[in-house]
Length: 610
Image (cartoon, rainbow, N blue to C red; front, side):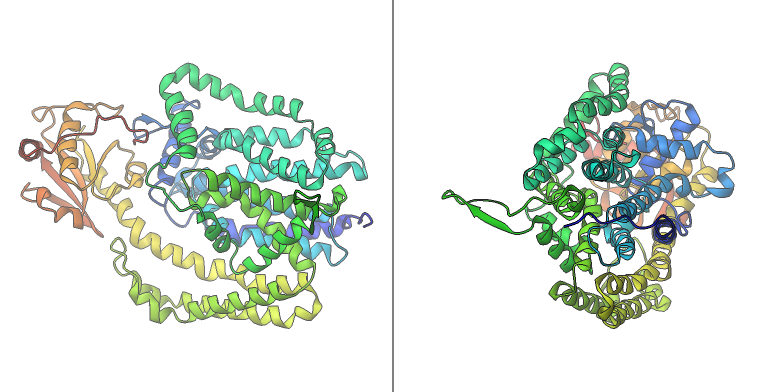
């Protein structure tokens, strides 16, 4: 097939501006209107804010303890924003600074997908529209809409890895038009080093597995090797990433090695941690959900990407019928990219939905390229899935009353009163209608018609529902944080028992002792107050600090071992009570439980503690 010319520069600029506008709607619109989502984002945000305020940019620290779970790049990105002046004006809930790196990373991926298809069109039909629909297919993924708006490292890592992979393919395809700056061999290795600083060495493994699969399927491993120069490239990656790892090992020593490399990397791959055990087929289900309602197009694009296979020899080994020209191999590259993520994390013992996020850019490419190749059964099935989802939203008055949400009393009546879910049903129905009406104009046009109502779904339905959830679930914790500031006596310790919400630490700026609801957690609390010291929270005896402030949820307060302590109820917000407990009474109850055989286990080694 002949080399296709790139989209004209003025047209390319128009598409990229439209893509940027769509990214703003999907990822940035009202980004700071809600508080931090418990449980993990406040740990990232508090660590980044501490970096900005203390000037210690080497090791993230939260609640008085070092946090070794992730490398520093996400903390640095958030911390730079936290260092900007006027936080109380533009960042009152802390979420602009904490979430913007994730949103910008996903927006950059949308632009990179569109730009790649604009410079290297894969088919003759409507390349500009195909580029825009690929960006939207990625941005509308349920996983991207969630992780692109929360303050964790997954979106930044996935964005950097996607950039490295796309630049790798561009370097492979670039010689067809001459080695220009967008196809420079060193660029993917630079971004790979940043990806290693975002989440660790898994970035190198995922890129290497993708390139290996692609080189084998293309029957062009030597050409791929020549154009990407992996040996000097890995030197670039190491030069970017290794200085921080070396400095962290030098300063923190064995605890950092054991926690970061031993637990958060090796053990997560070889053993189940934090009860995140899932069946081997887990990511098959995530693959289906993460591209709804366009999953049938994704599966068709995946089949097309691998292309026709034929038997070779009596051993039955199969190989591609024909290698593709480098500049026309993007669909095959995307298929290898997605399968590499699927294989790697399927083998891993610990499985989380967020681990699929690095595959979502490849899924966006496969969806758009499958639609570009024509409308058939995958398109019709995608319309059926969209119609089923429309019916589900329209039927919300039937199933919303079945929701049980103890943390969010009032959720069901407010959801029904808001009518957002009914509006969502109408938007999905409009997507089906536009998809059907525009089908005769070609795959890219029809796909865009289906996507535009789903783009409107985010600001009109998803964001108001998110804000409702934050008001019911997150605001009471923020109110408790304010109450701590009003009620706390000098140096009075603070604890939270039952539901453990790190946002209480973030918003109160106090060291918080977190314990669960069980009897041994009460014993732990009494013992920790006496024996555990953290910066900002020294150990003390009851005669030195006679009381402790305890934030406790209503369900935990009803348990037998937490009753009879005669607390002073200071404030109540939502499901949370603020108690002032006499520590002598607390220690008496702990002593009774200890004599009944309930031990304190807080000092046992734990890989994750905050």
